[in-house]
Length: 180
Image (cartoon, rainbow, N blue to C red; front, side):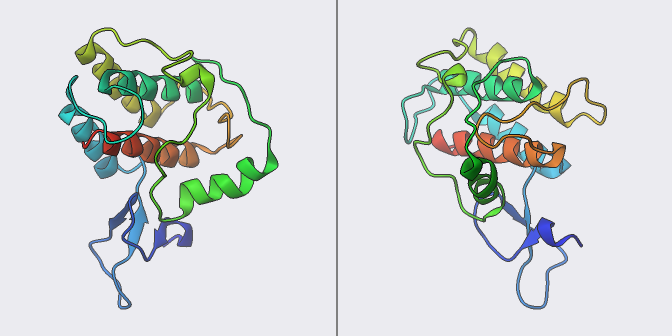
């Protein structure tokens, strides 16, 4: 078993291995690459409603759905983004965000292109916008991709596996924001 794929923790973004371990439960990093984790995210997306109440932040549920779609489009190169060329963010912060068993904090700033108060896509029809996010999740997890991952605006270049880990964490973060 890959040591990077397991950790002893119960924090968000990790799941229990049914095989267990002598010293406790082994937890695996959740990722859109794992069918069960992807299914969980898609199920939780379907729980959202246009009137879902936010627990933190400024976005409405409809804006958050468009933000998720914009974030996936950014990674796929369909939506341009400003790069933050800081070594600390591309190394230590990226490792902490993707691999430490902690939930992302509330109120993390985003890039202007996917910020719903600046340059993010405006909500249209909630059901159609939500279906678009589901379609983008399917697209980024397809066995044969028709795109190359672009550098993340904060974390820089990331592998396919890192992008799918990020996709799970980013989507989970915003679904928790709305209690889904």
